[in-house]
Image 1 (cartoon, one colour):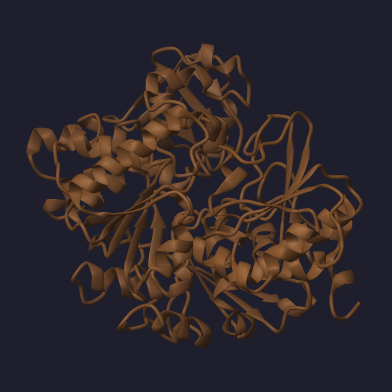
Image 2 (cartoon, one colour):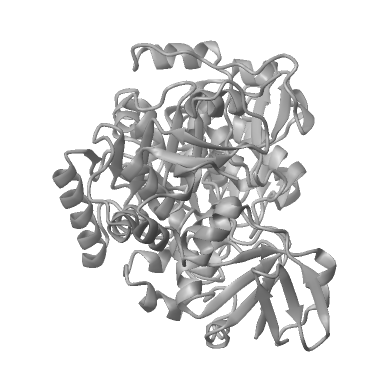
Length: 417
Length: 168
């Protein structure tokens, strides 16, 4: 009878059963914030007059959004975060560790069936590991940090089934862009989304994280996915024991949608709304000034491997910035030789950070400049000047675009071409 | 006074990521509010202004600087067809009323109208055009938080959270 969120929210609030529309107060398993949100959360704790975090092992900070610091002001924010973390005896992942959404699961903080609260909208990413993971503002983060609890309205769930196999050089980013183009930017507001189907069951951990990551771009509250084999082995290598949560066969969904991965083409989200989705062929040939491959959406090993495969022994025509999402991924890409291939091809490889995605540093756009980015938002001015334009795409499309200097269909560099 | 905006006003438009790292002092961020949408807009957000917008107001980043900067700029309430959920929660937490109205009511309200939001009576009134509409009521505990000016003020006053008793 219950969806995944209903089961997780019931258990975390000590109830036998809850249904969409109920209010619950849940115990949280981990709370995190980063250099864009943590200081305000610290101040919110001060406003509440609570000076101790509820459990120093369950509250984590990341310095990832503007790291290494591009300005003295930001350095001061970083200093305040380090000072607070030290006082509290809690863990802080400092400059160079990587993006919170990558490092948190890598370090074993995300458990299936758990409640993950992040002071960042892309916290929904952790739904890829079967958690109820949602983004909150700094005051909610402070409440969770201070009390270990947070209230939720149990959301309705939309079930999205994706069957069949993706073609070569068509990636999970193309699935999520297609879904986004269909349901639109407010299509899942206040709702949870569950992805099912043979395509989703086959996806790598990296690919699943990309899909869960962008659930918030449709307004969704959470994107808890059932575990597949790859994700289960990935988790077993990082955490001791866990109990996965499955939706009941007769769970009640507010809506059901179906997609055929076999028919999918490479997609883009054209400026300046995430749901302005088009096929790559509709915008093919459009000249670009910069390509960015990275972010919590697409800065993982599979993404870097795909870019290296396209760019190997060739040379980019426009500046192409590649930023691995974590130090572990950086190291893996280094050992596998992907970074050497990318640097030889003329790419600029940066240290693990959010990079230009949030407009803080490392490759901001000038007036009228056009970028193809593997990140998650193409809002006006997001990556620099108000008149710059951002096309969101998969790492394959981004790499093919870097190679040609204009938006390109990556399938011509794939196996079938 | 009503400041009328469109659909999908995201938090990057409200306060760009470029600025939120520059300073943590919210009152200093108000000069950059809506900069990429219309730099002149900030001058109209005087004390007591009410934003009336379309769908999905506050979508995008979770940055709480967005509702805080609007409140600091003088915005008294936001009326929209719908709100993005994180923005909605953040607004409740800082005591900024965010109320939902029908597309019809919103399309009839014009930029510059004198309008008021009454949470107690549960009504929005556009006195210029003699329009009146009912507000979808807040759950009781949220209304209590907003009445106290935000969750911090609530907690400091009552030494407990509204959810320490039964939620309704």
